[in-house]
Every structure is written in structure tokens, then in C-alpha cells.
Amino acid sequence: MTDVHGTARPAGARDSSTGDLVKQLTEQVSRLVRDELKLARVEMTRKGARAGRGIGLFGGSGIIALYGTGCLIAAAVMAIATAVTAWLAALIVGAAPFARRS
Image 1 (cartoon, rainbow, N blue to C red):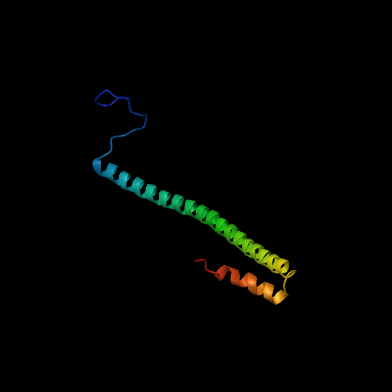
Image 2 (tube, rainbow, N blue to C red):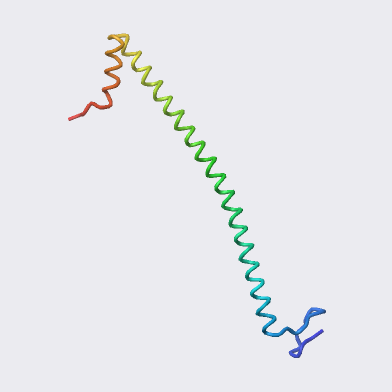
């Protein structure tokens, strides 16, 4: 089937008025916007889940680092306690971070 200009048209195609075309355009645009919003919502949900998991792992590693630092401080106190009394060793290790260099 060909139109007035000699170009081929699909079978069953009909001439649509400008009003029909505008109506179809607005329906398709609104459908496109709704579909894009759904897609964005799904993508943000996935990214949020991934970010939550990453934040949890980062927090867990911070806790492990905190306990590791505590163990190292206790080891330093015990090492110094072989030369001086335990309370003095704890005082030395506790005051060391606050010592100022001139």
C-alpha cells in the first residue's frame, strides 16, 4: 500500500488526524515518564541496598580496628609492666598520646 507521496505504509495503517496524533503523543509521553520513574525507583532501591551493605561492613571493620587498638595498648602496658609496676605502666601508656614535643 502506498500513500499520496508514493511511500510505503504498513497494512492496516490509516490516516490519523492531528488531534489523534497529539492524543497518542501525550499518552505515550505519560507512559514513558511513569516507566522511567518506576525504573529509577528500582535502581535506587538496588543502590540503597548495596550502600547499606557497604556501610555495615565499614562499621564492622571500625569495631575490629577499635578492639585491635585496645589489644595493642594492653600489650604495651604488659610489656612495660615487666620493668615497672602495673599501675605505672598503664599511666605511661595512657599519657604517651598526650605528651607534647617541643
